[in-house]
Image 1 (tube, rainbow over the protein chains, first blue to last red):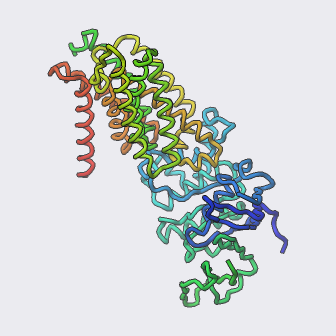
Image 2: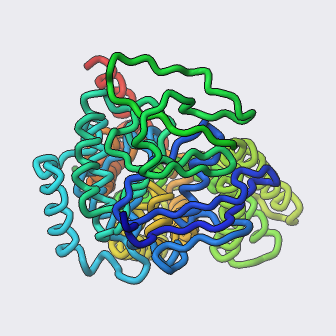
Image 3: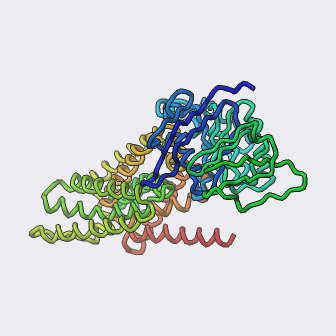
Length: 260
Length: 265
């Protein structure tokens, strides 16, 4: 199988917060049309990895290249879907306002492009079956609907990949299924990078998995298609995860063992 | 409406309406960005600037605005870098600014300043020049909001996303703080410190629940502020009570009624 071209490439990236090493010598390549889940324990460096790709943080050493550019310059090809921000629940903002926010850029002043952006925002909401809520206030939507709004916002710059931070937090299981269907559809044209601590509920459409716990271990497509009963979740000492999966003939994937 | 036949009442009305417009806009930004405590800090520490201007013999407005912008930016930087403990540090600057002002006034020979008029203002004796300055600031703030509405909305709602999209978050944030400081200082001159805090927070906070957008919240807060000012002034005229306190009482009565009403439903 020929690989798609590389979209994000991290080489020997290390990062420390106040001398506490969070990520060490991370190498990760994300190819086009990949659908990669970044999993790992809390405090393992998932969010840091994401912020490095977004260009919000700069690595202490190593390099990150997004489509041949620095993450800062490549910001328009990154569609960022942040974690649901609970503290802003009461913020008076309409769905359309949020989606239009996605078109912000330092060079173009939105003031002059308002009509064009509005039209585009409505089109994207329509694609995601959310157009009837365009005028609604965000507060009136369910968790799953809000997540669609954030995806619509991320799509405003016609990105090449979507970066989602724990997107299913606070969504009920029915909503999660719908949400994963949507991601599957989007994956026909877009690369998807998803951070999740919810290891039990990774969509079956995920093509590869990167485990983050200071270092990153990448599980290839071919590797994870083999179902072997091994350990799914590594912890720091390299011992097995204390969680077992019990299932009756349900399709589950088990990743190959690796050292962290 | 015979109350508004008098010149001083007309001036007071215009002052109240202008203050409501400025405070409705900046108050909305204050509420959604959780800057109420910082505003309190700016307003109180401003007294240090007043004291400094008197002591040094500087023009009053220049000295106070300069001093206040410096302290406001200092507090904003601390609030940015030390989110958990920023309230305590703002509290310290709040108190020390005020103490500085009082001591500097004490040290100025032959000068007696009326602390009460700083606290509660003297809306009934507003000079025309103050009204003109306030009007100019109101126009300036409106232009600023129209131009930067989308970016301000983005940094208020989701600062991290705004930064990813390349919005100049820091410069906008500090411009907002500077405008807030200007608002507070100019409105203090006219209606006093307590009324500034009330007009900044009460109308915007009431509207937050009902507004569907930040713009609606601003407009709603302006309308509410104007209503409170008119009713407050009329009551003050009718019953011969302090105008500033009367406007605040009208505002807070509506605030508590609204809070009680929404708790019940």
